[in-house]
Length: 258
Image (tube, rainbow, N blue to C red):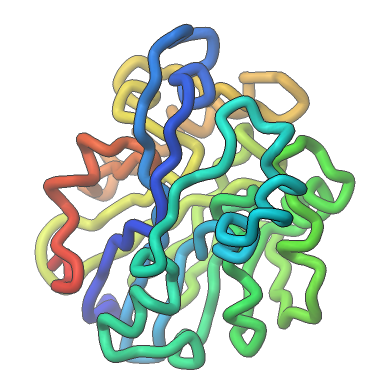
């Protein structure tokens, strides 16, 4: 039986960029507004965060913004003070210290940047992901985001975080990308794709994300098919990660999704 009690998708920032970043070789000249999300899962054993968004200090401080984002064609994401993850948690009557476990689907800046607020928590990430981030395998890894003294729990396979919350290996966008299957107390399970699928289009038309590990879409496409098969097997709803039209009707914050 699932130990999940409540679930919140949380908007932490918005990033305007060319659609080619989400759909490989598609969308040239088309700009989209993509949500940058964290997901809070309250269980009988504690609270889990899937991803922690960007480091708000690197966005708010002009010097850091120039340092980290001047080389990006589309600049930095937009994040208001109210969207910072500590502020979002405060709206729920929580503080960062109330988070017990951080599960990082991967270590790109828009997923792991807020880690500095959660140094007390266990931090789960795939072994291959941390190795690729430390190379770094691409420019979306900011070494400062994960260079602290964290309580790493390195993983090398699929596993159950708690009953009802299962880590799913979905490499391809990055070397050790992981998705998360969540069994809610009521209704269909939710399968958080992470950046294995940014948009509904990635899933429906089996299109790889724009950025693929070592510029090879083979693993990414296999992971998309794996997610679709798992959704069929479990009855789960697939949630793409950067699709604003998909996210908006599911955004009930500060009320839980279900």
